Image (cartoon, rainbow, N blue to C red):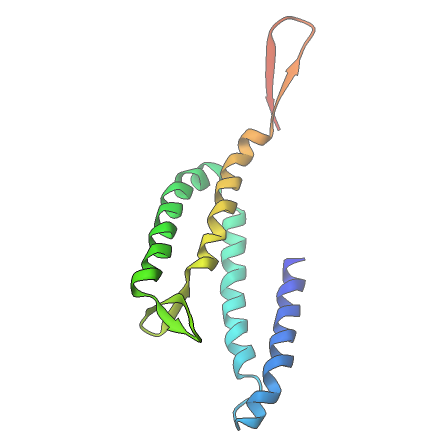
Length: 134
């Protein structure tokens, strides 16, 4: 499903940018190529993080949220204004939009809490409780 959405997004980028690129005498695939590189990096991160153990996610989630909050506040002080919006931090040739990074860490926290969601307490015929983890 994720791969289908990524491919659909690349088709949409191509359809939106190819005509403009041809009018500017540049390659119609230039923006799609750059977007495809970012998509491959994102898919690699997706595959790596989807296999991370929940304990590691719990350990990383707290500091990652703190770093994200600091970066969100840093945008107010040193953020670059682009098209009238001050939402980006320029670091050399890279521009970071911190709102995008802040969407990742609640997912990391949820992945860390998944261990607790899969623990079911089963009441047996005896008065003691038995815990089973699935």
